Amino acid sequence: MGYYDAMRYTLRFLWNATKGHRLAPWRSPYLLWRIETYCGVKMTQIGFLEFWEFALRERANLWRFLKWTAEMERYVHPKAKSS
Image (tube, rainbow, N blue to C red):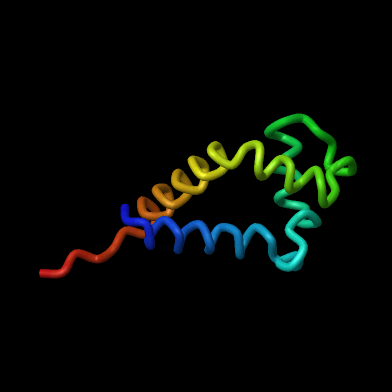
């Protein structure tokens, strides 16, 4: 998978995950729930600073997760083979 494919799937995931909160992703219930299940911090305790601290601290794992979601997306929606 190329860099541009990975970036496309990453942006698609982020666009879907932040629905209704695209300019303030730290308010997205889905992302807060994902953080809560990942590290155990309650959703109500996550604000702007906690969200970005988590994102910076876990950026390698987040990137690996986004690459995995891109791979799963390709399995679900494979490209048609041209003949």
